[in-house]
Image (cartoon, rainbow, N blue to C red):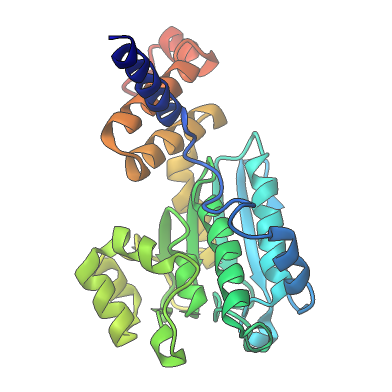
Length: 305
């Protein structure tokens, strides 16, 4: 009986720890690989920048900027991306994020110069773990994120689009998982995320066929959440970035605490088993119930407005 009681206590403790496990954070820890070591190696391959701007509206814009190489990721850009994600994780007023490429194209994946220089399998695995950590944290940010796809999003760029909550495609844009042409498979977590977005059969077709996904096809298979208008064809619609901001504002209206809470419960439902997701939802509910936004809404009787 004593042994059974002790075992029951241990099981209760382990379940409690599981329920309290945060959804945010890294996939891999320092026990899996030396992050500082791979960062130092990646910084040896400079070029391009990752730029972050925050607006008073609570929407941030993250820009992949390496136009001379179709916004391909150099090693230093991979490190900068991780640094910018860290900044966004600490942004208490953040509600929304738009991920875009500079100069009318999204991203062509990895800079082949850097890839060839770290072609050893062990280095590739470390780069893979580093980027999986960065993009998982990007997807798990406590804000609603949108990938604004202009031009081409190929290879690692296609994987990047899956690291946001939503995807908006500009006219003429293309998403293409071209990895098989390079003799590899997605390594930044794109395949796993793609299955969640479009299902296993569509994912298999896109990966094995290296199929081009245009805006209409993207909407059809639910990879894209909307198609933007061409500013050169339709007057007064604004730039594609302005259109994306307007689209995102529909989902970020309200206090940051409420929008962030919504993202957390949706994220837990997406990633956790049902019982854990319910426990997380209860805990998040407790952070907003009786809070300023809740009390103000009750006072103004604005529940159904």
